[in-house]
Length: 375
Image 1 (cartoon, rainbow, N blue to C red):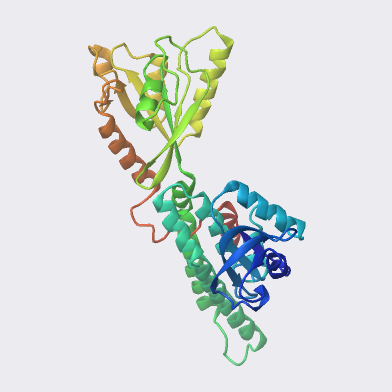
Image 2: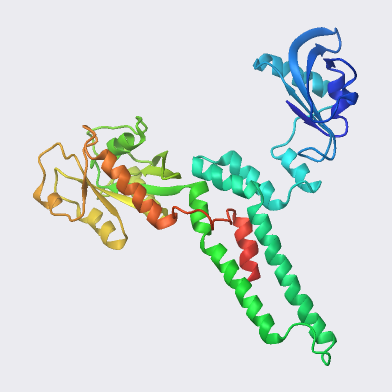
């Protein structure tokens, strides 16, 4: 449990018994304390306590951290006692907000904390750690410093036109152009950084009963979608997430594309077509044991798709077999699933994320908008 603020020492001081008063504890030193109920002085737990005095703490205020045994009931008791002595529950992100307001971290590092907490893959953790270490802040500060140098040089040249001092207009233009190119380079990689943190969306689309739901379950390694031999079982979008190449991949199983007189199924088809438009990649699912549906093939003509021919354990239809560059899988037996995952991972890596993350700095919409305003 962490308390931060001017009263942190006095609040915790009334809850512990130790060798000497809490306000005399050395800063950043681990001490063993006994937690007590201040009303009855009944022992509650044997705990460890660290005092971090302002301004040498995460928030810049006095901070006290208590490490207790992991009983939820015990923690609730301690929180209740602390609140009775004047503490309150922190708002989401409040410790980091205080750190920013007290000048302990800049805004890019504050945003990196949220990225670290929300990271879903090891690659996202690494990228967030670099931002937390200040890489983006350092680069932005360097950009700011160079822009100020250009401005100062121009102001000197304007104030003393006869002295031949300051910065010539040609040199200033060259410097600004170079800095703008650096901003463009950072912006060009924002989609890749976004993909590492937020993930990419892959839609499984195809005719009713083509095996989309069964394939989704096989890719996820879990029974996420309901599977039935009855066409039209999936009417709403069902999704699950896997990680490929350090990138979160959201797989979305959709309603089958095909003619229908049912209003609910028609709405499901409409949502499928919208999901296709909004997706980063489409897995076009073709039933390998049946003739391909014309409406499904039209999807492949309208946008780039990774074609997957399912039910390879059944006799193949000649029309389905004739579709070029299709990956054959059997979700029932598992044949081809590993190959499909390899192809899917390669496709995602080529489209949205290089192996080298060295240039991936900008990770939030706010950061992107700020850089775009510089152009």
